[in-house]
Each structure stands twice: as C-alpha cells, then as structure tokens.
Length: 164
Image (cartoon, rainbow, N blue to C red):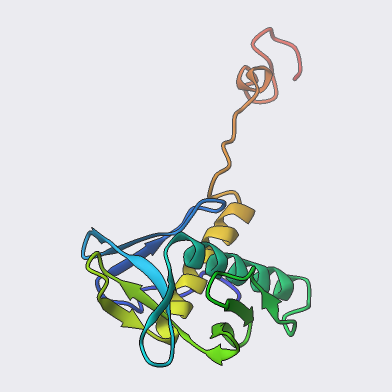
C-alpha cells in the first residue's frame, strides 16, 4: 500500500473523492451509486451511507497500517439493514449483512447492477487512500499563501535594501 494506488479496474466507471468530502460516482458520465448486495443479489443498502462508511473504513485501515497496526480489523458504523463494513489493509474491505457475507456493487440510475464484487471495493479503497495521501502531502485541500513580508524578499535582501 505504499505509493499511489492503482485505479481503473472498472471500465466506464469513475469514482472520485477529495479528502474530507463524499465520493462521487459516474458511469459513462451519468450518475451512479454504491450499494451492498446480499448473496441472492438483492439490494440491502445503497447511496451516501454505503459510500461514506466504505471510504472511511478504507482510510482508517490505511492509517492503521501507517501506525504499524495493519493487522487490526477496522469497523465502520452500522448501516440500516444489519450492514457492517470492515477491513484489514492486506485483505481489503468486506461487508456482512446480519452476519452473512455480502458484496459491493455499482448501480446505474435505473438501479441496474453495472459492476459488483471485490473490484468495486478495491477501486473505492484506491480512490479513498489516494485522496487521503494527497491531503497528507499537501496536494489536496491545502492552500498555501505566501505572507506579504516574504513576497518582498528578493535574494536574501528586502526591497528596503537591508538583509531579510
């Protein structure tokens, strides 16, 4: 998990995130949504809660890895319907529904499953971790403003002629 995480596992689907903001998801330019599917393919949960909890779990198990605790399972807050999302850095994210295994899916505007399975969770993990890493190395939300006193300093000399 060192370095920029691979993305692009889901052709035609774009998942994006800015650190501290919700995931956005498009399918061929049209809005899409993340969902949790039961073993029989029924939709148990979908929308912002699934996206938020899944991205949070992914960032938190990445943080655990940075602290040398990558072996620890991280749990997200419960979602209605008995949905629990958890993850370990070396296993990725997983979901259970009332204790039974489920899977993650991408749905289009009509509610049809466009992609499902471990690649969906892996893509969200990569996007969430990349946005968190960008924030840590100041590529993301940070705005750098040079103080006025430094902007007048040229080559160690101030505009007034004295040493800076």
